[in-house]
Amino acid sequence: MTRRERFLYFFYLHRTGLTVSALTLALAVYPPLWGNPYLLGVTNQIALYAIVVLGLNLFIGYAGQISLGHAAFFALGAYGSALLSGEAGVTPWLALALAVLAASGVALLVGIPTLRLHGHYLAMATLGFNLVVYLVLMQWDKMTGGPSGYAGIQPLALGDFAFASDLRLHYLVWGVALLCLTLALNLVRSGVGRGLAAVAGDEVAAAACGVDTRAAKVKVFVLSAAFAALAGGLYAHGFGFVSPETFGIFASVDFVAMVVVGGLGSVWGSLFGVALLTCLPEWIDRFESYKEIVHGAILVGVLMFLPQGLVTGLVDLARVRLARWKARHA
Amino acid sequence: MAFSDLLQFLFAGLTSGAIYALIALGFCVVHNTMGFVNFVQVDFVSLGGMLLYSALFALGLAMPLALPAAIVGVTVAAMLVERLGLRPARSDHPLVLIFLTIGLSIMLRGLMALKWGKNRMAVPPLSGDEPLRLFGAALLPQTLWVLTLTAVAIVTLLWFYRRTRLGLAMRAVAANPTAAAVVGLPVGRVKMLTFGLAGALGGLAGVLVTPITTLRYDVGVLLGLKGFAAAILGGFGSLPGAVLGGIGLGVLETLSAGYVSSAYKDVCAFVVLLLVLFIRPQGLLGK
Image (cartoon, rainbow over all chains, first blue to last red; front, side, top):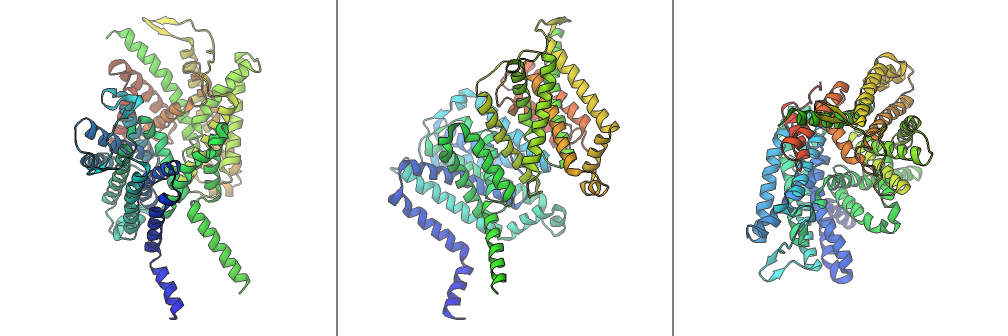
């Protein structure tokens, strides 16, 4: 191997790690250079949703299941952490940890019977669970504040250093998001991840190859619920206010739309899907009355022409073009 | 609790149950032929109400003309949605198709908001609003209309599937699209007509329910989701199951509103739905 080949091989071998490092570096230096409060607000939201969608993509994209109810776990994390720190007087960090644990416990209880279901039945069951959680948040107003929401949540803090400003929050939420990203990237290349991909391909064949399909599905469901609850807790302490509107079934549908637009089973695609669908409402705000039509049209356009997702689809397209070009000039 | 109260709750439950059943049938009809959940069904309901409103007040038609006009309008819209929005799709992954219908549904809702605005509107009932008395319970004429027209629609649908050539063609496409194409059935056109049929069912639900609720561009969303829940409860794809699931869900909802708590009536309905699915994962009448 020449020096150049060795260099390129090193890049190829460590492409994932290098991309994660580059992303980390970019995120670390971007706020002091360009960050204004508005932009930071948007990117913080992207980080929070990315945590949810990374987990959801493991469940939908890799394991081939469907959930239209992940906003419920987002809600359990947010309200759980907010109420534990606000009403029970637990410190925010402990409240966050307990809320994630509790939401995972709920996911386990709901997941064991629900994951026996397939396809549309699973979609309905998760949707139903989301509706129940949403309605309870709306109606139990003595505790949750009902439709007007729950305000005055303490920020997370390290000693006197409170994660209250957009800038400080940026480092906290992106730190967690990058940890989750690394976890997801490693998980899908481990034996567990291969087992999940096998379940998505063919459940019976996966079982025949020795994958405990029921346990695998429940585990990844609980993991994705824990991701969602973690994001929810960070949301609550980061913004200091939660209201049921953020956690309705439309939020769940949006999460799945982010997974589908980014590409089923593509971890990097998830990040992209989140970024696109979070920025979109900001961009198309100026078309006020056409907002919904444009939103729908983009979803329809992507799914119609690049059904494998925007990132995977464009990469495939580029590969085909390149191969054709090479064939013509060979 | 008096008998008349129970009767009153049952009437209310049957009314909303009949509406859920119509919407659920629309979901099943599309699922049987095309194999995915069509969430645009939700907006066919709103569109039915909107077109009825326009036919009555913008065109000045009388109710007996406006009602069929609205239903035909939704049918045509549904066929356009299939032809322009779903047939060009390049994927047959169910999740991608479901999200395609969700995208189309968002677009259609945007169009309706643009055309009719976002305010609440009122549609008059089909005939009169003088309640009849029956064993101490009040019975609105609209309730009778809902029940009668739903029953007629169900019987017509069954007759259509069992006795007409088009119904047979739809069942053939449902059983095996490739084989249906091989024996010369125009599969694309059959799918388009299936969508039209689902649109007609959704539109009928819309014209019947909007005088009871109120009319808004997004009135169909919650109704439509309950229709989906009804279809799942009965066993997705089963037509008798859809009717049973719809009526069951409607009655359950009003009974829990009446005897448990009106704030938590939807919670009760969905918890029962989840419990049924845990015990019978394939729904009540599912295979």
